[in-house]
Image (tube, rainbow, N blue to C red; front, top):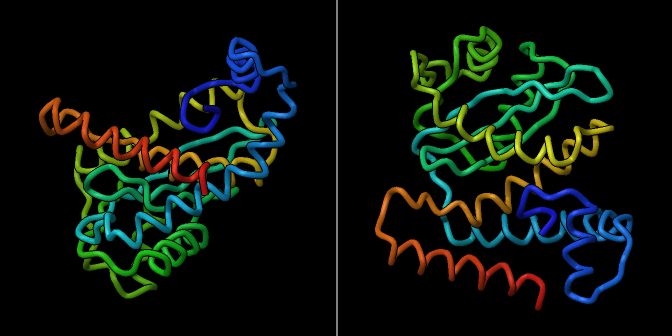
Length: 212
């Protein structure tokens, strides 16, 4: 519940209390730190084995995140269907940071046909160094897919009252992205009946992670 919904640790504690389970919110924190990355890794493995991610077009963007009053940058790669491919936290958003982010994304997901970015020059410099600058596409409103992908993360950030450490942000962003991908059904693209079938399949897979 803590990873899937925009809940605080104490919200989860109260929900479990209603179900007759008495725990501390610190227990929820311990469970999240222990099992969250394991569940996320299993979700990623199953989605990759099922070839659900696309290499047609990537949307790259970065969002400002404050950690103890200091600005950090959360870089995100999103495919054309809104599935988050990669999340990466840095202290700067220069060419070096963009290059590291791109190398990590390309190593995990392979090359893509198009890379949509904003007009920040760090992207162009990093793509030129990698020799794939011809894949870059920029333009007004072309990167709305990446901009919209930040919204679920921002809701989580508010519920958590921001982050305390860079390492915590990196871990949570990776786990949250994997779980979001599993339940992101793009319900506006198809009928209610198909949406219900896909939602039931995602929930069955989610429950299967706990059973395993």
